[in-house]
Amino acid sequence: MARYTGPKCRKCRRYGVSLCGTVKCAIIKRPTPPGPRSLRRRKVSDRGLQLIEKQKVRFAYGIMESQFRDYYDWASRRPGVTGELLMRRLEERLDNVVFRMGFASTRAQARQLVAHGLVAVDGKKLDVPSARMRVGVQIAFTDRGKRSEYAKIVKEEILARDNPGWVEVDREAMSGRMVAEPGPGDYEAHFNPNAIVEYYSR
Image (cartoon, rainbow, N blue to C red):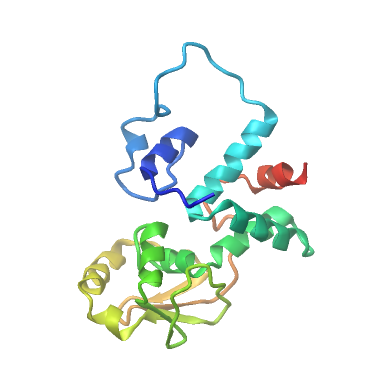
C-alpha cells in the first residue's frame, strides 16, 4: 500500500481526532465523518475498533503498513510492554524528533525537511526520516538549511512552541538534542497502543 497523499483532514474527520497536527484542522469546524451521512448507526466490532486505533497511529506518523508492521515485530521481540516499546520507537524517528523540537509545525513538514537534506545529525546531513535517534545525538539545520528562508521563519515561531521533557532545544542556535528516551505519556493521549497489540496478536 502506498503512502496516503489525499486530504489530510479527511482522515482526521474519519477517525474523530486531529492527526494532521495543523492548527486549522477541519475537524474543528466539521467534526462529522466525511461522505454522506448514514441513515442508521452501525455498531463497530472490537476488531474494527482495534483497526481504527492502528490506522490512527499509522496515519499520524505517516508510515506505510509494511513498515508499521516491522516496528510492531521489533517491539514484540523485546522485553517490556510491547505497546509502549512500539510508541517509543515511533517517537525516536528523526522526522518525529525534528517535529517535537519545534523545527516543524507538523510531522509531514518535518519529514519534508529531512528528505530535502536540511537537517544534520551530529554535524552530518541525514536525509532518512525513519532513522532512529539515540540519547545524546545533536540535531540542527545544515548550512544550507540555516541559509533558507524557512529557518528564519522557524526561529521566530519556535519561541511559542512547547517541547517535551525528553528533548532539549537551543532556540538561538536552532539546535537540539535528545536528553532521554521518550516514555509513556510523551505521545498523544488519544492513541491506544494496547489496541494495536491486540490487533496484531490475533
